[in-house]
Length: 541
Image 1 (cartoon, rainbow, N blue to C red):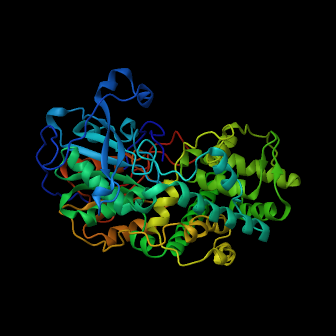
Image 2: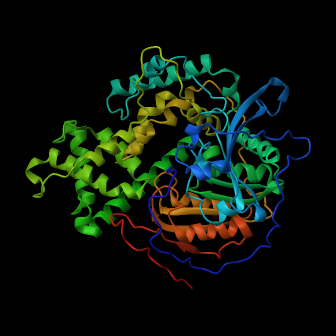
Image 3: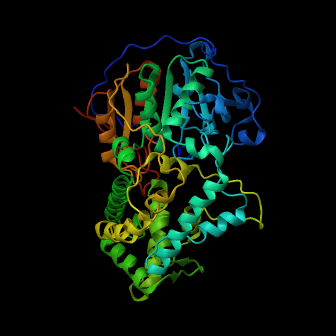
């Protein structure tokens, strides 16, 4: 997730529907740890962690570590550390409480999220912002499957991003199996306690240690599963919960293969909408003009003929194009650059059909490719392994997979028939790894999801979110015992901070517990391909 707003708010989108009201809670006093729970000891943050914070604002920030049980069912087995950062509320006299933040992943670091400008305004004024690295992640006790970066590279380097041939499939499956073996050997006992249920129990301790009677929480992407898990495990301790970019909790926790298949479908929906929008805006999109048909031809050409070389020397294979496109669909601000990359790849693939205009500057497009390949590691031989493997650990703990590795070629073929652009590419993720994960029967919270909370949970979903399709937001709002859905006519993964309409709803809800009326629809501040556009305003009945 992006940690800052993409640009200034250029307009206001008004929601459709009428606000409803829930009585507000009284402003809280200075936080004191709840009875029987040791308080968090806050101290100074490392200067590097506040590098993007103005100097005159840095005294608002404090950092700390907190010990939680490795195994909440058997707390005497030892503890692990959770790293936290806090930004004090601007208006301490009218402080409501603290709000915990989770950026998703799983495995995303939330430690520095209190420095984000996404929550400036009423939420930042009235709440302390607390970010934390969940168990296994970053500055907290990390879950690591390798002793050296060289070992990690030797495993990940054998995982083909888009296995097509039998040889590529076999090599990739063996590498996934080796990954599981390394995790079994090096990860230690933490690997048995990496489910979202474990993280929710950590979060409840952190809430109490921060002096909060009830949880205020904003979760993005996977963070919506953490929020949904918390409110069903601790419904009476939940005050205001915002879930932006939602998973389908029931499906995710009951059928990993089908969840991932439907998640892949979200990328197809977002791609189709991107290509349609590209044609609609004409010259503002470099790839406009039968974009859908030309995309399909381009992907098929790269499969049949292999990679092409762009004028600047950049090599683009099918896996490069598909992976970069999938990543760029998260952020509408990158759509112009994405279109330039696709058009340049088309020109290199079909020279006789090149556009007449001069080749574009591909520096920004090349950066999209680099961002899509951030997992590539570059370190001296035998350098200590400083990454973590929490993404795999959480997903393989939460999502049950009834397939075997031998099923993967068949699954990938089927997904590709159903979803030509992303089916094969995304099939070779968790379904290929998790059947060999060295925790055969992980203990995870699998519902029920309908426990009623005192206040509605605010669920937010974009129509064209690639990673968590809009249908998932609808399902989340229905599965929870007390929720209100806000729909957003927007591209991109998650929206808070990029829509004045959503931001106002979130602030009113978080501060005063006001919820919007049913059927509320918001719009983004900026539409794709038009960064200077005024926000689209919607006045609904």
